[in-house]
Length: 192
Length: 217
Image 1 (cartoon, helix red, strand yellow):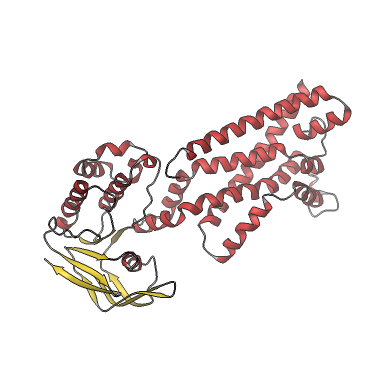
Image 2: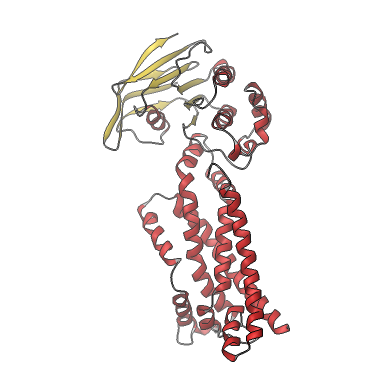
């Protein structure tokens, strides 16, 4: 669970967001949407302590893992990114991408890089997962497979998932909330 | 022929020693300068870039004054010895390696650190990943330093004294043989120096070629 109170974030003297109390409940997915540059990624960065708040506080109960929108893949091979290679292989099979395991990370396409990064994140054990646009470069069928993988590996095991995503998709997930960033506020637009 | 071999071996011995010593300190320091965001580090970056292009005779005269009989380290009697040459070469090579290493970190720094932070990767493991990531660039920086040490004349002449079978290296020998009119010996040494330098450059270009072929660099 994540609980944020009176959170305010500024970037380059410009107020990005100002929100009252919000709680991201555990065991469900929280999908956050909003226009480019509205402060979605900054919210995630502030939550984990990578970027300071201007005011307010945010508490993550339990351990967390965060996948940034722009991530780094460790070289030389895709396999070098995983601590548990068997689990990673199993997940890549689910994404129909097991062949990329032996490939050089420098030769991977944008979508393939995201598959490696997502599987790397999912392989790590934590209570809360913050995923910043984890499927934006994937093709439609791969995106769907990725959503089902997130459901199977995280949500079915009671983990909390916060995901920034521009795609309005709720079907793969049994329960969750859809938030929209507008006028520097975070509003729940759908609860299922 | 024995003398030429001795000169070549002396050159390789002092240049390898100075490059290794400089690299042991310059590579971690260069990585620190690249990764650090504090103001002192930001100010030091252009200082090392400038020092990389400093006239080597300045390093020569510094070491000469330190090691001369009247100098603070005169009692060690190191002037006109191989350690004196190594010391001068370290002073020349160190800033060159630092200035070549820190720019390697800058393009990947933000994304690399944010990824490591997000995955809760311990500092030691981050450093291991960084070395693996930058290995071609780091090796190229060290080879650049070795090439610079091999090519040095002025500082080596000042602190080494160009003593036969002791501190005579390829560059100082070429100057001496040319001044004495022994052009064939000077030319033989010149060709040997050229071959060694060519081999080093070939290696560096080979490594950079691998990186430049990379579509994501």
